[in-house]
Image (cartoon, rainbow, N blue to C red):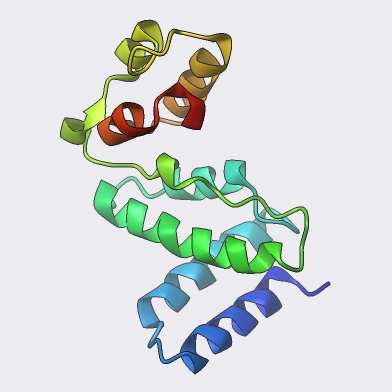
Length: 147
């Protein structure tokens, strides 16, 4: 199995062979891989991806969401050759507070009327502990089963 850096180079080469310029994406992913290497991580994990996103305190939420999408694409690619790779959920994209449900309310209300099950509370508490927001459309559209 190759390193994350080698896998990134393969991924960038592949995307560019399909006609994508892949400039911003490649720069962001190179910084992500550097972050992973500094932590001696061999596999992409949700925990480390979210830690990487949280360190960007001056970055706007929409840009964090964009960067998470880059990592998700790379993680999907990497998961084909590394069974330990975790692909972060798109639902974890940090967004503007005005477009988010209050996590406290979501947890106590049971998300879209689905009942405050232990799994829902755990998911809401995990997202809250990471300092992220749960999108309104997620709770309305998917209900508690998709947390």
